[in-house]
Length: 310
Image (cartoon, rainbow, N blue to C red; front, side, top):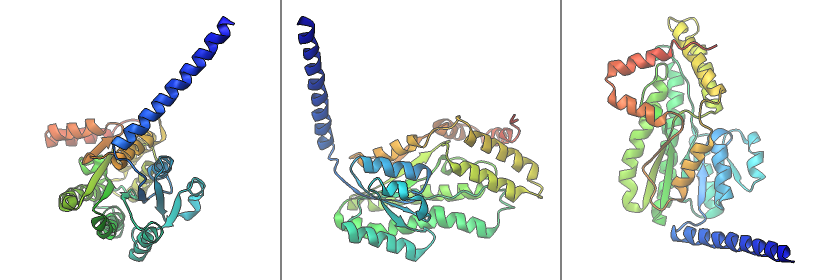
């Protein structure tokens, strides 16, 4: 009888503390001013965008997931996320996508510019057409979407723009020149935009991933081999591509969820930071780039070309 009574007491204590923690968490959310937000996120068919869309929806937000490849959006649709067909290099597609969200919801609280494209190769080897395409996706598409949502956010007196940048906007890698150009541009554009729209109650936040294990790195490595084939850069280019392929195929890099966590903080924080830098080696590489003389940094990067992959 004693054991039975003691067991019942433990059971009641367990539920007491469960309910206590639940109501504390609800009170904390209210104190933070967190509420359901209407969120448009691009590049949501795979990788970081796909994971972030799911997590944002699980927190109760109304999520519109934009991508070109609608055939990949079934799993998101099944979780109550609304897919939006959008090509960030096409003006009509972007305009229609933003207007669709506004027609459905009447507002856009958060824009997450996550669509990105990486084509690696020596500056001499990458065609101007390919360089322009990279800038169209990573810079001009991002900028145009900002332009499209800003009038609505300004009228609301509230909004948040979250731009996925990269530590490649802080440091330069061999064979990543055009990609670095695009990410340095995102950094500069976001810094200017943040100061311009602050008086309207709009925040601009940058996410700066380091090494993240996604298919992006494998695709970039393949592009590097393709662009280097039959050129004076073939030997170094192929070695660096092998290093990239090994890294993005291994467990050395961070999982996409670390970036998702940064996006969640940027969305839900009452006073978000201007930058969220996270992922394998992100802080270390930027620190080294800032303190090392240029020649030392160049030598360090050149060393990566001679790492032997078993």
